[in-house]
Image (cartoon, rainbow, N blue to C red; front, side):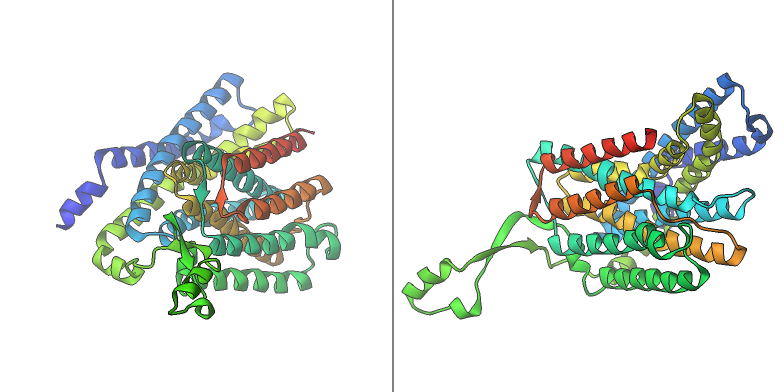
Length: 404
């Protein structure tokens, strides 16, 4: 039985993706000396195209496994698996850069800001646009979405705005870093506990049917006249399925399959991040020659690293799964900020490095507009293609800022 499960999971296609991904990582390690800047232009272009191709192959493998896990575990657990696997590796990547040679005072700020704009505007916008065009509108669980946005507002304010006001030269002092680390990790841990426990139902799909009538006890009556008058007091509220199997029971029943798919997902996603790290050097070289802005490199790397999650989000929107779009996009950003900022502050304290987090006025304005737009968008019971278009417009403005 175990052999059959392995055969259905470790298919020839899945094994081929692993070989392609890790083979490319090994090839880059072997060819490392040839790719040290300055790289001849033909070799630079060839290497970049090859890396992007391999990343796409692995990304579709990650999406495949994530969707299987999502169907097996249900949300929010299925989406959380993909989110944490990518975000944790992204945190490790940023930490490795900080611990390496050279000065990287703004690496965390630039990376997390790029991720914020990509997720909140590009991915959310594209998902809502395509999902809205296909289905007319997408329903979502407003309680869960509100929790995500509340976390994002607090964490991004701590990360990008507060250091400019109370820090020194855009960095938190050691005395300020400790309470910020404790606060961010504590809030994130509490959020995860509630999301996976008592409030798990707030992050499940809204029943596409519809809005069930809710009648207050005060309006109930046994008389016909009172029944007629009470119907005017009916309020609409989304129906959320409540017959979901407990996650513990699902894990016990399908433990082998879940563990094997988790292993396969991580083995497939890791080359994406390792290759994106190598690609950063090539991009810096190429963009430097072209005179492109330095921030463009971080933006492109962030887009590549979060490609699997972006693809999964768009596919969820096309399937009409509005809450899963929220779980993937907003959940990814909550995890990114909630884990990255404490990690880099801790590394800065231990190594004596300055960690510049304060953003420029232009980026702070765009972040504020993005957060306000997100709250406005998801305050609606149903989101439409028009909502998606406005988010994409903000991302286009962010692109103008990057190139200005």
